[in-house]
Length: 529
Image 1 (tube, rainbow, N blue to C red):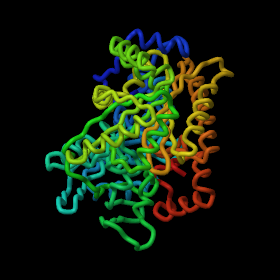
Image 2: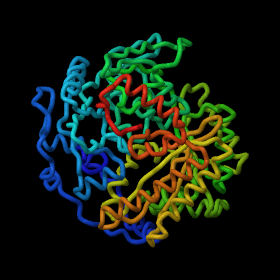
Image 3: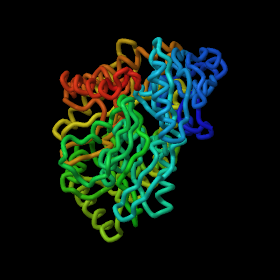
Image 4: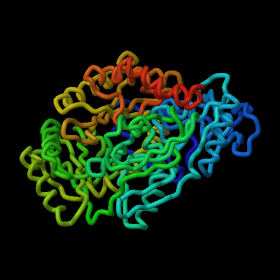
């Protein structure tokens, strides 16, 4: 069963052995668990619905609570503390496009705000209803989850937009294909959500980001329907797909999407390489990217993340022997770990491996085989569950990400970590910070930073700590001309920083586009712009 106040299935628990707890306590202090609000306590707070009766809409308090928030830190604090101050007035579960059109017509007639809802995995506030006089209706697309058409000649597939990652891949695998889009939220997130937030999968270096995979589809707006044909290329003016990508529900509801697929790979494996230090690892990864070596993934952890990942793994004996061996080989305390993947035809698989290892060895890399890669693949979608475990142990964990050109990677990563690491000094609290390069490009890389700090019994104090850290890190990113979001979208959390990237005129252009399709401003108000 899905957790109502945390991540994922409530039967899945991320292990947290005593040595891991001792490790965290030694770095940032002992966590202090505090009581969370119960489901019953929050259900008592759900107000009466302001919506007129409609056969497409459910107003049950539990259904409304389950759609009231996503997975951002502010969402977590609200749910765990029992301070959920806004709820949708109802939830609709359309089963076809006509029902979506009926819902939009109902919303326009009664001045109802609409929030499209996919898998509920947003970490930047896409799903939170705003306070105000207008009723709010969440449109859950989970019943739109089928493969509509598969074109094996063109390698195209048309899906309804509410299909989740596992269901999408299952339907493709039956026919010998894959989309290959594997964000960390893969188990819960949906195709429509990936498009609406410009999502990026873990193996995007091989399969492509969602903007490379999304080639057409159908969108229902307040002004009518938009059909985007699937074309291999076009010079017919600005690309409307690029307006829909990243639109976060402000322009309409994506009901179906045509995506580029591939035959299932003949072979795939993930490998580990240790470097003496972060700088040499970054140089190796840059050279791999710029040599166009066709890997499927490169994830380079800095020294702190390498150490922390091993410490929190729960494999104490394995870690002890690994550290002993690395020390004997003179890979000391500054060592960092690269996990890279190779995917594709058997014919080129070993050639790619040799190319990558040659570059890594040139930069002092120590190849460790597939053991670490297999461990990573096994737990690749389990890591978000650590948030639940840490919260219950008295810690808060959050992430932020950006992308910058290669010349800025080292300095940006360092300064973001410094900003976060010292962000709570005035509050006499320590912050554990670590980072990795999660995606690489020929001209730059994404920097994905994780930070942990102790949880206060006071929810307002927790929000204050988070706001301080988020603001100072975001300002640091902007000072290096990095994007405010490489893969999580904008939502509410990043909206204040968007103008620095888009310019004031660009923001005005986006607002004008939204107004032209949604003159009443009922589509997911307050998000993106």
